[in-house]
Length: 108
Image (cartoon, rainbow, N blue to C red; front, side, top):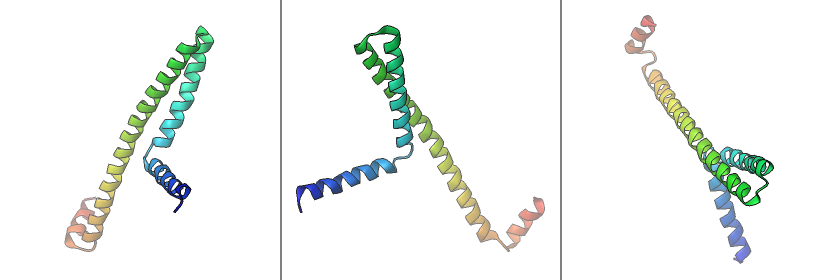
């Protein structure tokens, strides 16, 4: 195999692994756009390029990490609810047509 083929297959694995991370793309996009906006606003008010770059990087970092943490928390909650519902439906299917299920239906 040539080196270019090996590199391209490695690149595909990296891209695929980043694509599989929940909330990664949205967090990065929000972070980049807010970093650009924060740096630009800071520069417009102060006209200091170095400080505007620092403000831009700080804004990007804070927004990316904050949004990623919030998004992952919500994603995990949704995943747990889906697992709970799957287990409930599995138990319902098992009990369907039995005396145990008929007792529960009369209560509801």
